[in-house]
Amino acid sequence: MTFCLNKNMGISLFKKIQKSAGRNSRGVITVRHQGGGHKQLYRMVDFKQDKFDIPCRIEGIEYDPYRTGRIALVVYKDGERRYILASREMKAGDQIITSANAPLKQGNRTQLKRIPVGSFVYSVELFPGKGGQLARSAGLGVQVLANEEGYTHLKMPSGEIRKVYWDGYATLGQVSHEGHNLEIIGKAGRSRWLGIRPTVRGTAMNPCDHPYGGGEGKQPRGTRRPKTLWGKITGGHKTRDKKRASSRLIIKRRK
Figure 1 (cartoon, rainbow, N blue to C red):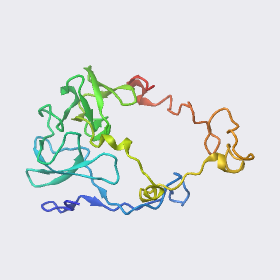
Figure 2: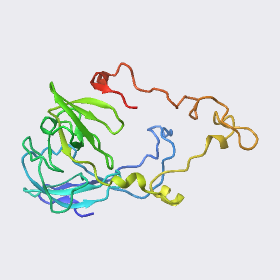
Figure 3: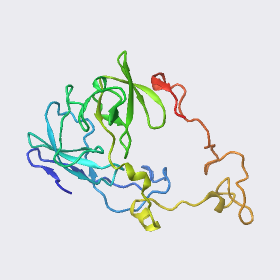
Figure 4: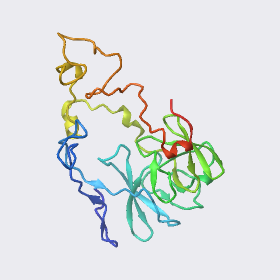
């Protein structure tokens, strides 16, 4: 931890989050395979970056246990410190700015309608002023394909092409720590440090516990389509609500 407090603001950049181990308010497990793990402090990341036209300096790039990408500690001219998502090229000492007229360089944040076609952006606002929601994981970036009629066309990492309001802000570049998907956990103990509990194979269970369970020795799953523990079809089953309002903004579905 580099700084815990904005000296002039009296605001902490860290917060303790109570762990739930995947349980709801009634104590029922709603997300399996969660629990334990090392103690963590949540970093208050600024996704809005709403200090407009005020330049800031990168003080350092830090690890965040709650996300896959790295975060950057920035200090503004008035002395306030905030955490933001770090881009690939970002390093200590760099100067960045959030502005409607910001120079088009890596790490700067500006409106989508100003960003050249072909550029990659991250932490994209779906609704102007709401803060970055798209492309926040390690190594991610969405490509600007077109700007027309009040919308910017973006190509997602999944291959989906969708429209977003062009008055929204986005940061130029791609999220840092692109090698996250190449990391090897290496041992069961590290999974437990990360708060991941063991997963039991369905074929190793009894028939009363899983659709794949039972049989003598190793058996095929015995069902044509893959299913969850509760018998719901998983492979190829479409889950998106057909009446979802944002469907009109999708130009091309993901593969």
